[in-house]
Image (cartoon, rainbow, N blue to C red; front, side, top):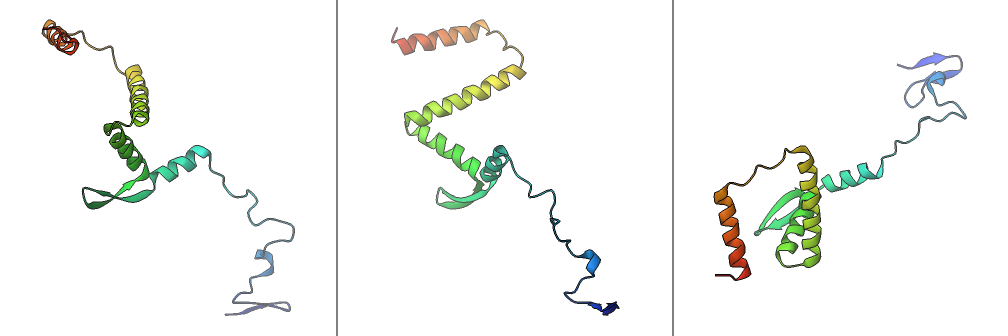
Length: 125
């Protein structure tokens, strides 16, 4: 299956001269595609990792592992983790609040329950 063109033999590992890379011209003129910082972070957070939960090994994304760890530390009375978690929740609620309608007014029975709970918390009889 060799072909002869002029004095140059075409075959295995010998491509035709017109299909070779030309001198002075890049084989990839547009260059390597670059990713933005947000894309890189998102890609890294979506990678899976192995964690042990209740003695069982599970594969979860790093994003899920970070959230689980933040919640666990917050539940263990780590004040920094609690503040960070509350800030994240507040931001999520703010975003959701902008999309949601105004909350409904409380019924009189609900107001009575809340007043009773507040009184108990203040130590009033």
